[in-house]
Length: 257
Ligand SMILES: [Zn+2]
Ligand SMILES: [Zn+2]
View 1 (cartoon, rainbow, N blue to C red):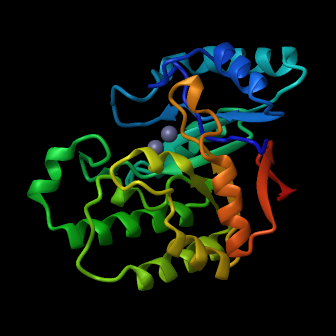
View 2 (cartoon, protein in one colour):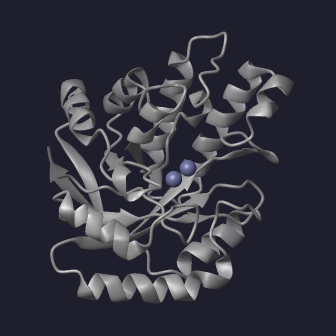
């Protein structure tokens, strides 16, 4: 099984402990996984309590030492929040991370991936433009290794009136110039949009711009670790990808597919 770099534990909004996740991954034949609990400088219920960071750092170090059959990477899913870039950068630097996923879950103060009512009050075209501008900015900060669920705006199957091709091209060019990796996040299959993040069309553009890919299930329960990975790998191959990317201490490790 290829490494799964996106999963949550009960330190943030996941249901299981680190040990339970490792055990499940081992039973499913994974040789490498990465934990990526939510870290947000906005006070939200689904992110971890930042006071528990030392506890998390100790725990992951301990699990990395004792786990023989599964290599454990220490990742984090960190919110990109314009205006809090320096604080975010300092927080990231204070942790011995293997990789950092940068995710956009907010437009201003609207948490658009949990607060579905907000969609009735906004111009969807403007929402899409704002979202994709933010993920481009996130990449340009240079503080993230990976851009998380890069077209999350489609989660609730609400779509803009215009074609997305131009925005995909602009984003892919920024990702390529900024040197970020994009994750193929398989959890979108379970959401109203019913497809991976990013979409096939977006992935094709990313491949054209030579943007590398990681794999993430975004599991919040142990049963979802590695969900749809066979399908994801087949899709990447059909688009022309020959490798995915692993990380150790924020250095890339290519993995052939
Ligand atoms: Zn997320
Ligand atoms: Zn996540």
